[in-house]
Each structure stands twice: as C-alpha cells, then as structure tokens.
Image (tube, rainbow, N blue to C red; front, side):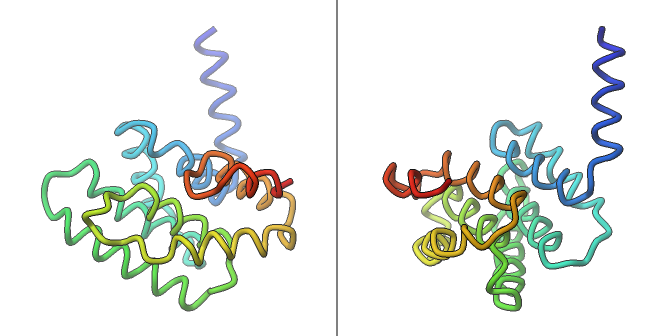
Length: 158
C-alpha cells in the first residue's frame, strides 16, 4: 500500500508544473517547520526567472528566518526588499499580491513588514473576477483561510 501511495505521489509531482508545485508547497508551508523547509528547498531549486517564481523565492527567504537561528533579520530584510521590488515591477500580478499579503499576515508584528495588507486585500477583491480558473481557485483558497478578510468579503469570492 505504501509503495502504491509513493508511486502515485511521485507520478503527480512528476507531471506537476513547477509553479503548481510552488503554489501547493507554499499553501502548506506555515503548517509545520518541516513543510516550511520543504517549501524553501523547492523554491531554491527553481530555475525559472519569471516574476511569480521570484516572488515565491523571496517568500522562501523570509520564511527561512522562521526556522533558522542566525541572520534572521537579514533574511527577512533581503526577502522583503526583493518581494517589494518584484511587485513594483509587476503591480498587476495577483499571485504576487497573494504572496505578499500572506507573508505580511503571518510575520510577527514586531518585524514591521505589514504596510501593504489593506492595499493587497483591495487589489485581490477588485481583480479576482479577471483571473483564469486556476488563479481564481488559488486566490479563493487563500481568501477563505485569511484573517484579513471578513465573512462578507469571503462571500463575494465565488
């Protein structure tokens, strides 16, 4: 049975695109330190240089501060600076806004990286309907578990 499960999992990961693997791993990253490490390792292995892949790599840098004992401040600063730069160059990419919003929701308040929550939330609400089915599903999953959205706002995401 374990062999069958392993084969099915390997088959799924083999045919899954890099961005889908990043999305799935990122969605689970905050559940445990092991999931965080798995996401970081996956992000580091990505060879793509598109904005979304780089956004996940920046998020991985920020998340690395959660599980490491050294250079935590530098990791957060470098990752946040990189993510902000990527979003500045691609302001209409909804997935980058999801990444930043999720990072800012989950980072300790003392770090001070929380300045775009309202903007990103408004962007997601106003641009959700313009996305393809895959991104709509991804954004919807995020919104449903996000602490930044009210129940009324969640109800508008279909």
